[in-house]
Image 1 (cartoon, protein in one colour):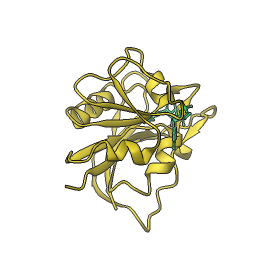
Image 2 (cartoon, helix red, strand yellow):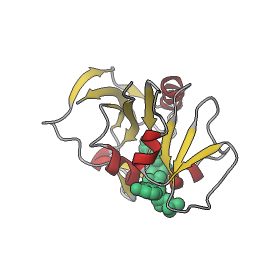
Image 3 (cartoon, rainbow, N blue to C red):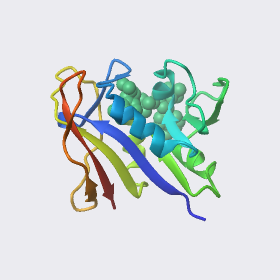
Image 4 (cartoon, helix red, strand yellow):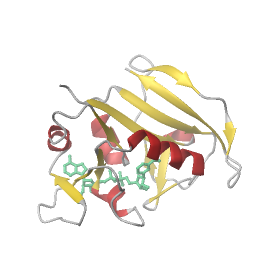
Length: 164
Ligand SMILES: NC(=O)c1ccc[n+]([C@@H]2O[C@H](COP(=O)([O-])OP(=O)(O)OC[C@H]3O[C@@H](n4cnc5c(N)ncnc54)[C@H](OP(=O)(O)O)[C@@H]3O)[C@@H](O)[C@H]2O)c1
């Protein structure tokens, strides 16, 4: 069975996704959607994204952390020395998620078949991490939600599913 690879990401204007090791927005509905979509599936991430989690590994999912440090080890995670190795660790699994961050998304966008995108209509001037270009020639929008407003930040956002 070929593992279906889905990128899941929340992107603000100018493809911004992060700042100083953290997310740009903590939109409660978005975090709930992330949990609902990824629950039970392996989640593949870069070491810096893993270290941004306040409570360590995300429960109910295999946490596969990519690092060049062969000695890296933390409770509740599996490590991989490359994206390829992380993907091969999911052999036999129907679906796995690539959950970031920027460095890992850049390597994964050519491999994924689906992008679950949260599109946030906000400019973050001091963002320091970005999502790679989503080429219109390669990706098409299959579903798009209505536009919603985050009560905390006031930012408007929508959920979009893209397929290759
Ligand atoms: N908006 C969103 O949806 C979203 C999602 C996730 C993350 N983020 C944000 O993105 C930022 C983190 O992204 P980032 O680009 O700085 O880091 P990252 O992609 O999370 O992690 C980078 C690290 O992953 C390891 N790595 C990456 N490629 C590798 C490879 N081919 N082989 C071996 N190891 C590899 C390296 O770890 P070592 O240094 O240990 O070797 C590298 O330093 C944070 O601000 C985070 O909040 C946003």
